[in-house]
Each structure stands twice: as C-alpha cells, then as structure tokens.
Image (cartoon, rainbow, N blue to C red; front, side, top):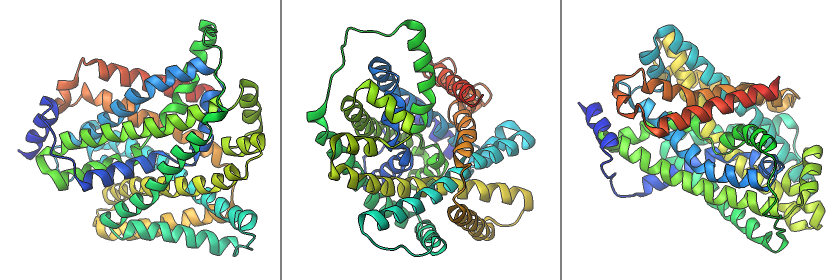
Length: 418
C-alpha cells in the first residue's frame, strides 16, 4: 500500500513536503559525492574542444544530470519491498542470475574509484605537508592508514554524523569554487563568437564530451542509500521528496561547477588549453604557472583534499551497501554481521592500494566508466518498459533523452578505450 501511494505521488506530481534541514543535508551529500578531484581536470577536458561545444554541453548538463539521477531513484523506489537496496531491485526486476551479475558490476564500478581516492588523498596530503608546510610526513603506511580510517570512521558513526561531515566539507568547497571563479574573471578572454566549427568536427567533439560531462556531475553511487533515507524519513512521499532534492542538487552542481569551468576556460587561450591537456596537469597548476600566482598554487591541494574527501564518503556509502547486498545473497548471513566484515575488507584493500600507489588506477577508472553509464542511464530506462510500476514513464521524451545520452556515453568511452 505504501509503495502504491509513493508511486502515485511521484507520478501525479503532488507537491513534496516543505524543505527541511534533512533535505539540505542530503543535497550537500549528493553534491559532495559528485564533485571529486576530477573537477581540477574538468575545465581542460571539456574546454579543449572549443568554446561552442562547451556552451552546448553546458546547456545539456542540467537535463542530463537531473533526469538520469531521477530515473535511477525511481528505479530503486519501484521495488515491491520498502527496504530493498539496489541489489534487491535488479534481482526482482531482471531475475536472480542477471540481477546478481548487474549488482556485482555495480559494486565493481564503484570500488575502483575508492581505491583511486585512497591513493589520491594520500598523495595530496603528503605533497601538501612537504611543499606547503615544510613538514616531513609520517611513513606512507601510517599516513594512508590514518586518513582512510578517519573517513571510514565517519561513515560508521551513522547517518547523522555523515550528513554533518558533508555539511562541514561541502560549504567550504562551494565557497572556494565560487571565490576562485570570481578571482579569474578579470583574466577572461572571450573568443570570436561568429566562428563555428565544422559540423563533423563539432559532432565528434560533442560525442566525446558526453562521458566527461556525465561523470563530472554523477552522484549515482549514493542514490540507493539516498532513496532509502527518504523512505525512512518521508514514507509514502519519498518519491516526490527525492525528486525535489535531486532537482536542487542538480541546480547547485550546474551553478558552481560550470561557473568554475567557464571561468578557467575563459582565462586560457585554446593553445594553452591544448598545452595543459598535453602536460596532463590540473587546471589550477597550469593557471598558477601562467599567472605566477601563489594564491592559486595554494588552493590546488586544498580543493583536491576537500573534493576527494567528500566524494570518497559518497562512494563508500554506495560500495558498502552494494557489498552488503551481494554478500547477504551469497551467504544468507545477516547484513549487520556482514557489514563489519565488508568494512574491514574495504579498509584493507583501500589502504593497500594507497601504500602501493599503483600506476594502473587510470585504467581501472576507465573500465568502471561504461558500467556506471549503463547503470545510471540505460538500466533505469529499460526498466521503464519492463516494470509495471514504471509504465507511467513510457513514451515520455525524458525517457528517450536519458537512454540516448547513455548510449552516447557508453559508445564514446569504448571508442576512447579502443
């Protein structure tokens, strides 16, 4: 009964309950999950294709972000079980075999990102201690272990502690992004607006920019846990409230991240963007060299540290829930017991990766990309035509839009890999 009411609310578009502190906390959590250290490379990766492709992708970024995450939230809410997580939902709708395979791929798409963040956080803090503070850091084993333990401890402290941690982290991150964007405004150089790239060149640039844009704003790893929290908090109104929070999260992401991207891109010439791309350095490192600014140099490690920390927490939330679901279905052991085992296993794995500092992490991230795109864009749209509870969304323009974007993202990723 509760599920049918929930669907009715989300389908009829009934107004969600008034905005609360709970909603603000989750909006910040989703924002923090999306904004990882990759934001320091985003202006170069998305701006190197030229000004007009950047403008077009900026216009598409909002609908892509909101509609895709709304679709994934609806998919999780479509289960007949009110306590179902992502692994339960895919098994219910696609059968035991296919469901468990999809759930395993989902976990394997998130987990490598945690390994990358473990390495990135250790490297960032180690570099900051040496170059900015002039302090000899502790051994890499102790430094990485302490940092990873501290972040996992926040997650184990419960939902309230996690949401407070996100609030503490995300407000400074948003303020720094906005401040730096404004700081660069006097250096803006507007391109010639009348020069359009050739259609073939433009279409190729836009196609290859789709996955970059998708992952820059992706908070898919936290969506299942987010939906669960709304179900516990709002009951039958979880669908309408989830959509409300996701809409505001998308707006916040678009405003802060795209302002940062445009400000950085307009501060550099096309030749400089190409040079930065060739050097594979972050946009702040390149800008600091161009403008000879110690202020920008100091901000680089700070933004990286805050962004990695916030995104780590969001991705750990998704990996933890996913691993618990997989282990429970394989062993039948209670989730409460498996949770502790899963946390220990993930801690040891992330710690080992941070100590070893392997060079294969980029490839691991590239391989997780297609799976994330399929789960965020394609799977929920296929479910619309398979699941009776989602039939109200069949034939809608937004459904086709998300599906097409997902196919473009997956094909562009595979093209780049091959």
